[in-house]
Image 1 (cartoon, rainbow, N blue to C red):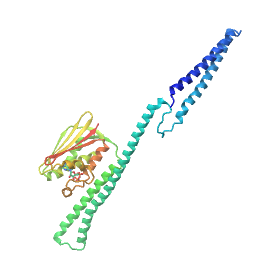
Image 2 (image 1 turned 90 degrees about the horizontal axis):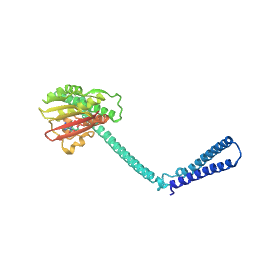
Image 3 (image 1 turned 30 degrees about the vertical axis):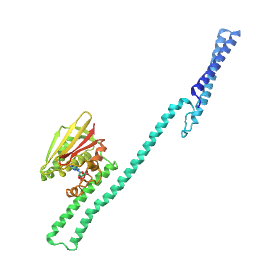
Image 4 (image 1 turned 135 degrees about the horizontal axis):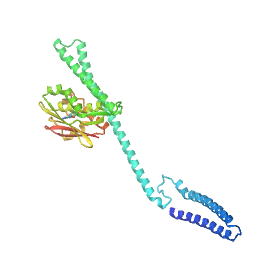
Length: 337
Ligand code: ADP
């Protein structure tokens, strides 16, 4: 490893010495000549020009000589520097390559997880679709073969009707989720007034809330931000729908829309059954239900909160969940401004 500063010093010294020698010699010769002052001045200027040209070529040669080891440097080599001064550069390069390697590993890990999630999702979808379809097909077959008593026809038709409804809701949720997954969002972000959007969701859920004697309370102020209205609507709807489904008879749902200088905070609280701590992380997973039979009974697909989580990600928003078993649950979404 040689020092670049030494080589640079040597090159500069050679250039200066040669240049001074030429100028000195020319002055010495010109003084001894018997020409007019103007002729001597012209000759001196010519010598200076020649001197400058020579130094220019010398500098080019020296630069090539100095840079040659850099160009021949093998970045794969264990010890890079050909000059001691390049030691910090080598360290920097090593750190950057280490970081790059770590990032590559992380991306590979994420791809593996995504692949696993996708495979699990496909398996779960098939299972979730097969169950109601088997039931529909079974009841329809019994009816077709005339094996159902007249008084049971209404009951059987009702089962088929409910199972079909469940299938339609499930397929609707799968479509919503896959649109979010593929980032296949056609709509442009537009100005959304969140408070009014919550009012609209409440009015659509009024019948379902009344059936369970549940009351809504909406607080906050009109706040506007840029987002995709359809997705935000689905998110608020799913949270409010859950707040009714997992509430107690005569319970309350409180929705709040607040704005600070940096974010808009939407929270949906209920006075329902709550979620165990161990389940809090998992409720956002696809098809995860804390109580499978209860969830199916009340018409859950197990995809509502996944849609909320993905919708939040589209808006760079954070979703928080806070719950106490038997007391209630609060979902908070923070939309950055
Ligand atoms: P589902 O369609 O089953 O409601 P979600 O993805 O919306 O699916 O919710 C996943 C699970 O999280 C639900 O099955 C339920 O067990 C639980 N959950 C969601 N919201 C609430 C809530 N507000 N209170 C209690 N449990 C909830």
